[in-house]
Image (tube, rainbow, N blue to C red; front, top):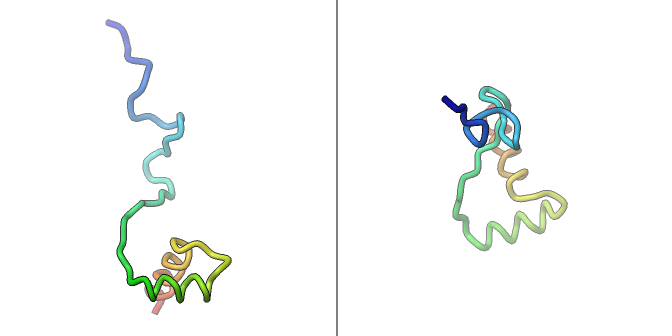
Length: 61
């Protein structure tokens, strides 16, 4: 029997091992006015960073 040496779910080849810190991509919808305010206030940061930082602060409280 020949082993399948190509593909498969394994660590390496751009894949992260299970249990490691892994980011999850999700889609959200926000108002244009809110996005504009975020761009003005946090112009050096990405939207995902601003949202993640706000969620971390919210969960600490």
